[in-house]
Image (cartoon, rainbow, N blue to C red):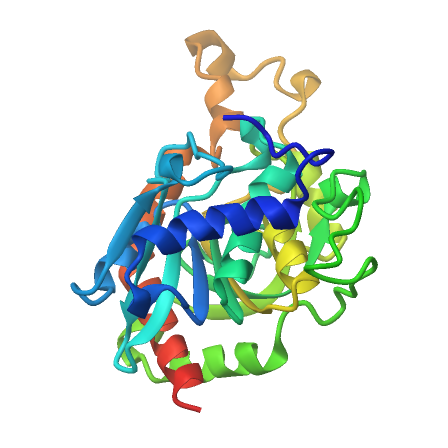
Length: 321
C-alpha cells in the first residue's frame, strides 16, 4: 500500500477520502461516532463488549490509505457500534500500525485524522507498556498525564512538514494534552469498579515514547526513569500529538505488562571465578527479567476484562453528563 502522496494529495483530502469510503459501508446510525478508541497489544477484546447490533467491522485493508498492522495481537480492523449502558456510538481501532513496522510517522497517525473527519470529539488511547517506576506492578493501569516524545524531539514528529490548517494550528500546545476532567472522571469511574480495584492499582504518570522494536536496555531504562518517565512504550504519543492538533479531547491509559530491568547487569570482570560459567549457565544471570512480546500479550489478556470495564464505565460517565 502506498503512502499518501503529500505533494499531490493533502492529508486532509486523503482522510476525507478514507472517511467517505467508511461512511459508504456503515449504516447511518453508526456513521457519526462521538468517541474513538485505539486498542493496544492484547486489549482488542473491548470490541466484544459492544452491542451485538447494529455493528459493523471493516478490515484496514479495505480502507483507502489506511495503514495495516503486522504485529501479533493487533487484529487490524475498524469496528463501529454502541458501547455501555448509555449506548454511546463509538468507533474502535482493534490494533494499530507502529513506526517500527516501517510506516512513516504520518502514516501511523493517519487513522486519528480519519476518525476526526468522521466526527469524533474525544479519543481514548490504550497501550501495553513497560513499568519504569518501581512502585508499579505488572498488571497495574496507568493514566497518562504527560509524555516524553524521544522520536519527536529528534525530528520524527507526525506534524512535521506543511501544516494542514483544516485540522489545526501550526504550533499546537501539548502542556494540556491529557484532559484533566477526563482523568478525574476515569479515577472516579475506577472507584465504581470494586472488583477491578481489588485486583490492580490505578496509577497516573508519564509515558516515554521510543521507536522500538527492541525493548530497552538497562542503561536506557535508568535514563528514562531519571528523566521522570513512569512507563515506556512504542506507540500512543504520535496519536496524541495528532489528536490534540485536531482539537480532540484525550484520555490515554497504559497497562503495565512487564517490569523494566533498571539494575545494572553483572560485569564480566566480576564473574571470572563464578561457578555458573563452568556449568554454562552464566547468561541466565543477566536474562532474568528480560521482556518479551509473549509476556506482554499474556498480561494484556489477563487484564483485558478490567481495562474494558474501566473504559465502559468512563464512557458511560462522560456520556451521561
